[in-house]
Length: 356
Image (cartoon, rainbow, N blue to C red; front, side, top):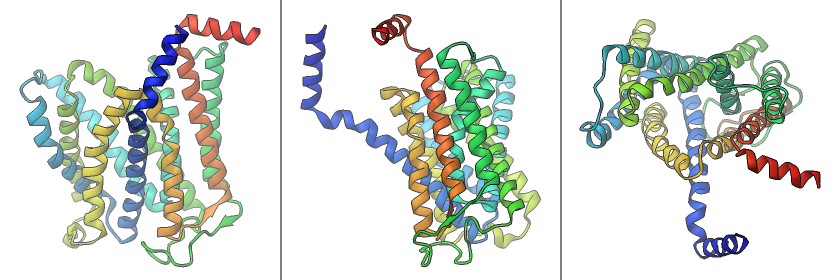
């Protein structure tokens, strides 16, 4: 067995570029998400209505996905019962429309860096929701269970630090911001506004996590992934249009023009929904979902430095500490889950080796 493993490693060394592709792909995915936070914030800073932004974003995603859905899955698509359609409609409303609308409000109240930091809560929130729905199990007496419980507590602690503690400010590259409102400074906001934005961001992630959990049930009755995604984007477009029209009747707010608003809409609709959908599916196929989830902190790092350069955002010690604790909580939960999925004989061998 050892000789076989050595030969395998030797063969792997001969084609190093092939094994690096998943690592390059996760960097691209997280960079795209960082761009989403930055461009969304720039559009809102330039006065774009967040509800209108969500409508245009989902409409652009629908237009982008429809040709691919029809070409690849239309002929093999299963029938769509009315009950399943209602479930998809509800799923779209909670997981996409509400999540994005609340996220937009929270981003106006806070910063792109906070939005990136709180995404590290998503796997923990998703696990908690799955636990409540009895999809996941938490065995507190086992080491993986303790790790997951520690991750949950760390997530809550990190969110609390982000919301309630600011500390000293670090003003990196902030004298000459390249984009955004020159009067904007991410952390020089009223405490009440900042705290409200933090909790709204967590609420948005909670709806997003609920969407991830409930989607597994819907996919059992409708397994065509691309068509399901396209249908959800289409339904979300209708829902978000109704909300946007009810809240904003000024025709000037609906105009995009050749500016950062149009760029943000096109980027979020095509790059985030279209490109990352394919890349994430490919990464999960090659390396698994845990590998993808572990790359999430890259978004925070990219967004933190980019927002400081582009927007002149002031970074506080509280944001750095809160983000770091959120990342720690994320990795703790992921480690616990990976240990639970290890074969029992592998764990026995590992424990035997540790005991000497």
